[in-house]
Length: 307
Image (cartoon, rainbow, N blue to C red; front, side, top):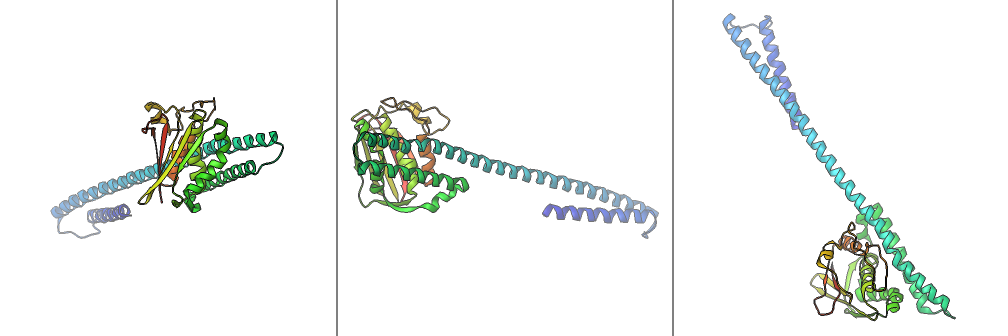
């Protein structure tokens, strides 16, 4: 707007001085004499030329500014487009990866029921929890495709120990198949407000299935949690072989080929831990992974979430 006003002012001054110059030259405007007329004509001509040059300069400045404004706007739009594409790509990976665990559990439980003479309550409960996990994942992915920020609208107050125990019930076929014991050290009163489906299915479940995959038969897992001021810390430790420092640097990348067969030849997509990183960011938390420092081999995941 400022540039347009300056251009209009420059045009007005140029028109005024050109009018005076030609008015004196052709006798439309009286002057004090021939010598003075010549000086005035020269002065007005110079001023008119300067005004025109200034006008051209202002016009070019305006075009230049508009160009840079348009370029910045296009760059911002490209940035938003790239972020949206990355989010949608990640959501597709979540669909591919996170469906596999509950579906595998449903299959394992169904196989157990088929081999049994009578229906048991626990297998039916496992199937129910697995189906609910799939429904929650679908609902979250659908909501995030429409608006990635909508994940915060589905927050609820949850008791962390109850949520972990629900997940362990769902994962019990995988745990029992390898004879793995899980030690849970979480206060029964520890609560936080967050998106339960994301925390349970996209974060803790992915870390747990990874821990089960790489722990040896009859191995052990630990889940510890405590609160420090306004933060909740969750530690998940497995008894697997651990990981090289080089692999630890790329473990969160979707582009790195970090998929490795488990201790019983279990296959994976390599998406689980990158999904953990993506998902905990949605909850304004952080995830750290390192080799265990408390003695046994294995990995330790440290999750930090706001209360």
